[in-house]
Length: 91
Image (cartoon, rainbow, N blue to C red; front, top):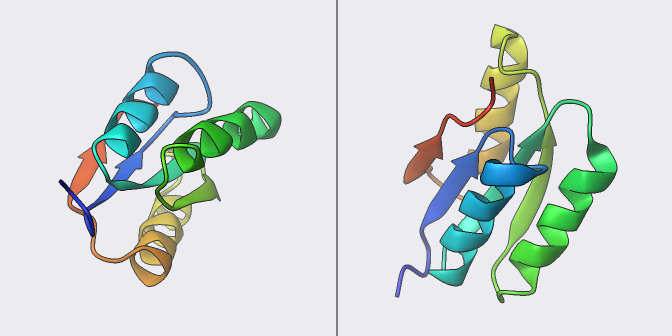
């Protein structure tokens, strides 16, 4: 389906962000799960993504911090590959 595709969803620890991350996973995307404070919730999102049979990584970063965002994107590319989708869900 979308094997080899990569999505980064900011603010994906809970709520709409989690639902978006899982939706991409169900479509075969590897998913980078971003959070800034809710690590336990973000780990649950990673578990839900991985249950879909795709790779997931956990990325703590504040989207309001340029250095955090650059490091997060670099890590995503290094561990999952080039980003195909970016969902700016975090406030």
